[in-house]
Length: 201
Picture 1 (tube, one colour):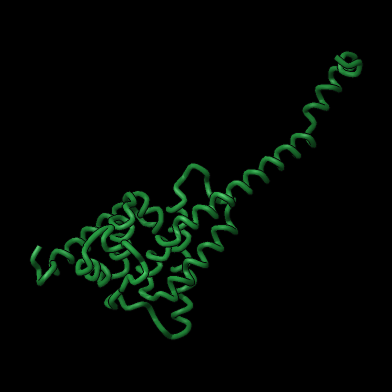
Picture 2 (tube, one colour):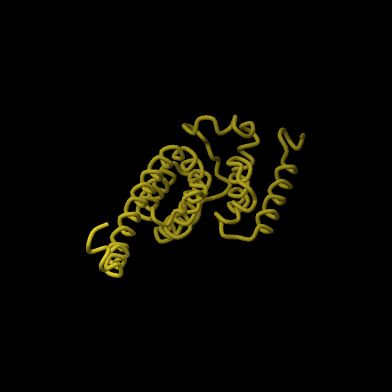
């Protein structure tokens, strides 16, 4: 034990527990966590690009708008990497960001340009979206899903295509779980009425 530490134990203890030393260590730890978080998000973005694009296409029915949504989502996710909570689902966080951008920016821009909202009756073709149809349902049923009103189409996609729980869908869309369930029920009723090949199940 050093002389200073044996003679001046209070000084030694104070030095070891210095607020400045603790602050520096804490800041260094936060910086490392931020770097790790951003690296994880970059990796997660790569893994989720196709899913984000599909969701953007479901919302907008336009490939160029879907591209814009994905790019904006990636940028915002990296800018707000510190807001992601490690241990939670990154895909849900990314879907929430994309949905928020769609509501707050893309739609308002289309309205300002006099284009209005996307017609829910437009046909959505998933060229380039790889295995979407085989992942869930046949092409004919998928076309009927895409003809649903946007609110129903969105919950159907997130719940049935992406396999998210009702609670997760509610969190992404910022609506009550009961609303998710009612929209899914309404969508199922419409799909049942339409039915493949003129109503046959």
